[in-house]
Length: 190
Image (tube, rainbow, N blue to C red; front, side):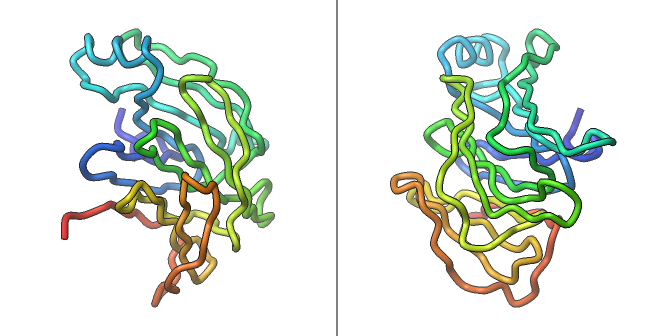
């Protein structure tokens, strides 16, 4: 099912080639590479190196969730993927070249913004904290940049930040001319 049909989902692009990142309120979906079992299963399945889908956080209808699952397209099943370090919805997420997923910002409850960020490691099947962003981003866009860095932009913050996985830190970059939230973003060839 495409991310837009999931309702409250967001697609996370691959770490190879272009890295699209679509944001919709709620759950975050992403194509995962990572652990050897998952790599071999997705390759045998004809999906290529990527194919598993991470679904993390979101709104349950009653509360903000900190749960995560991975969808296995070969087995047509969901597998528990651990507990996030923080319950969050409207977060931005992107698959990084190292196979890990950066999940940043969002809300812990309606109108209670988060600046925190975390990393999902599909090999360890675990979430861990990383440095917090310098501002909050609710419904921001996450997209890969050259040299394995990540852009987090928009999300009712008025600015953009760059995450460096080598240092585990964010730094401010140019402000957006028009701040948007719940927008779609994709890396493009230039």
